[in-house]
Image 1 (cartoon, rainbow, N blue to C red):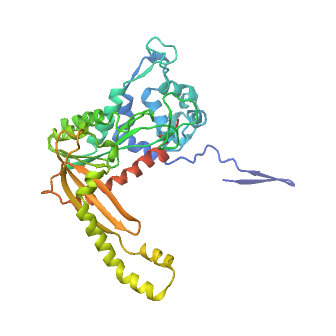
Image 2: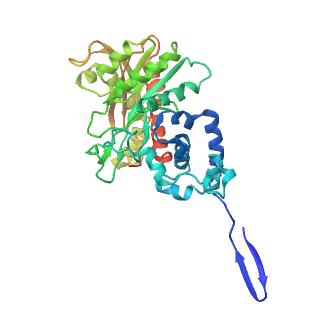
Image 3: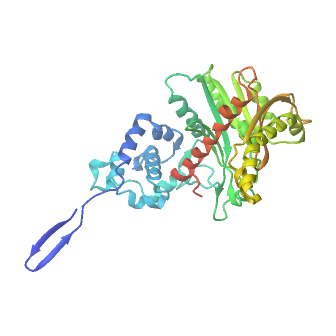
Length: 393
């Protein structure tokens, strides 16, 4: 907005647009939040020991302001010293009627900091002078599953629980952070469990622990909560080879309507059992390659040209399903599906272990339709870290 005012020979340009905002989209987000009751329910997961006669901002309002700020891309608590005057955020938090009054100001950085920071040395929030807001971690963890369950009007026939770990790089001397050679840096290694787009578990862990550390406990917890409302829903547990553990297999096998499909590493026995399939894949690839090789030999002299052409020949892929048991770690035989690929780069093998019987789903469909879609979970983790700033440490 701009205006011009002529006073004699002087020209005055005024670009003061008044009280404006670039974050008006948060108003729509706030309406959605009110409909779903997300921040209100999260607020119930905290115990407020403050003297209510001196409280200007309820726990619910503090949570909503902090979460709305993150959604808008303001990851630092310090940002709220300016955001507290933002008109769109005031509308979202229903403070619009008091725009010019101090009572209409939102919480500043110090007030919000008391919500999310409480040193371990503070053992009793009731007697603490500055840290009087106490989180109930069990209730917070449970609320994620409750939001998921409430998003369905009726129980679904089946759901898939995806487990994975990622890195959360740190840039200081944070407690519990260690160098992890796999992620090439000092980091944490949080455990995530998703069901589709729904986040069910986000557990921050040190990076020097087993990738499957705590996974069984979390599966037991969330499946127990799901079963309280959805007794007839089939649950498929999915994960990479980090979760190919006897205790996870055993738990799933002893739960009604719970199955798993989890990757596992290869070994000499599995390769030997797939020897005939490897030969078939190799023979099929060479058969497809033969006419092209003959044509290239008649046209070109350089072998490197032939190597480039080989990459254009489709890879031959075969599947095999067997019953298999490790020498020590597994308590019983289980179904293992092997994927054999033969191409210009030679042999590649992948394995998944599953409780789904061959009579229900053949090996090719098990691998391509049940296991491979778990790669979509990587996008959910990216959304957490890039869009919601979950890797902020």
